[in-house]
Image 1 (cartoon, rainbow, N blue to C red):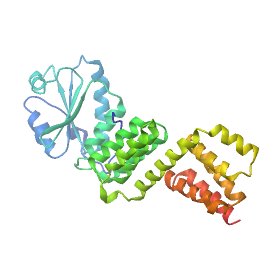
Image 2: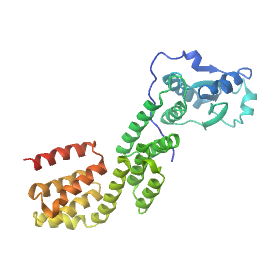
Image 3: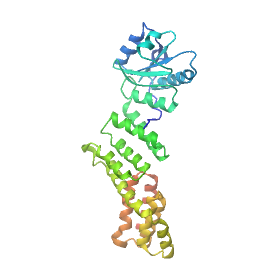
Image 4: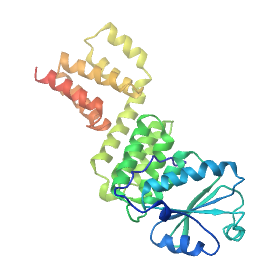
Amino acid sequence: METLIGQGLPQSGAGPSPAELIKDATVQTFMADVIEASREVPVIVDFWAPWCGPCKTLGPQLERHVLAAKGAVKLVKVDIDQNQEIARQMRVQSIPAVFAFFNGQPVDGFVGAVPESQIKTFIQRLSTMGGPGADTKAQIDELLATATAALAEGDLQQAGGIYQELIAFDPALTAAHAGLARVVMAMGGPDMAATVEQVLAQVPAEIATHADITSVRTALALAVEGAKAAEGLGALMAQVEANPADHQARYDLALARLGGGDREGAVDELLTIIRKDRKWNDEAARQQLVKMFEAFGYSDPLSVDARRRLSTILFS
């Protein structure tokens, strides 16, 4: 899954000057500007040439995001026409070609024109390795927020890529494991449940009972239950319409709506049962609603609104 991580946080403070962060290298300066400098912060090397069209777009994008990182990474530009020996040593076959060095070794790179979002990803990933101005926690929080937004918008490729990168960086990052599992759930498919279980099996034991992880397990159980119920959605709708007092049919309809992706409809059906008969079936509707809150996340706007509506019903 290709990673498309969002823009990293700009670092606070004035930071190093542009001349310190972006340099043009030669054979004589490459060792100092790249290899030695990368022992302090990651150094990006951009191989380009004046005649290269894509280089004219990529170069300024790299410069802009390197400057925004304010010292977390540096950029060294190598004109291959003027520095053929360096290009040969790096085995550059086509341009633009971008390599990243850290602690004196190449650690990442890409070849060819790429979307600017991938450039942001690339620099954000390098920024978390350290260096002056790198605020790892803030960057992780920003990436999690970006992934959450991408998941909500249905951009599963971007969200999944971010979560995978974060897990690689910090295997104990609970939110990333939970997020990746939710991405797999959103992908669906006949093997969805088994695949989610495989993802959850990779969660370290020390965080396996964290609320984020148990929330995913609850969501998975509801998804499996709802998928089965969704097969009879039409019949259940007709049954409830014919007999609005049939709470069992309405309860099953709530699960069917949830299985079909209609979260709001599922909540509405359960709240209707509670409003009509809150004690029905040992408060099954309320208990199922609580499971949904856990699955959605208690801070989810739908959970917040539904809890408010539930309180109004219970205490009216």
